Image: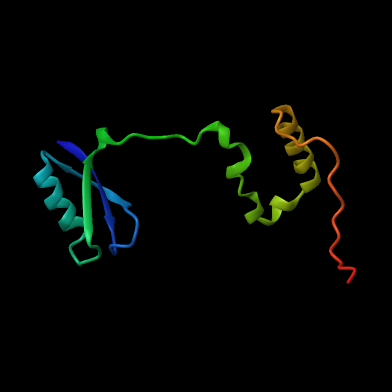
Length: 112
């Protein structure tokens, strides 16, 4: 028996979501079992199945670096923010991506 991964969407505007897996000998039986297991009560509009071996994974590339850091969502993410900023500046400078020179002063007041 093959393992078939099942993806579904609740409405036509929703993205596909992995809802589970079924074991079946062929595609027709996998579709039937997926419909019975995951769409029996009309929970969705589309159902897709694929063999588990046909799924391919892409890991998060290291080139994203700190772009995936979501520590700001937790209170402890603000601890030692100065040290984190300094480390970021050093990493950017080491990659040659830093803009040389001092930052221009900013004024929040208008002299009008």
